[in-house]
Image (cartoon, rainbow, N blue to C red; front, top):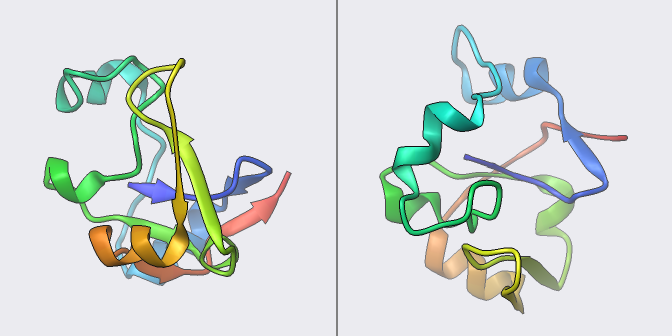
Length: 100
């Protein structure tokens, strides 16, 4: 799971190199919908660790004091200190995001 600011996009080549894998592609929503059964499609929180997924955070996001994200729906939002998110999720911080 890649977590990055909304104002940025995933650079697939950068992410591929950063995690040392052969191939990366953006999954279609129908391919991962079943992994988040209690969440609205497109509103999944960045707690991939709770769903058995590795979590990669863009280094630019790790510099922020707070992080805000959908809480499984489009009507609920969670805002917390980035250091608390990092403590709960233990993401790998990598350089893979580019400005839109």
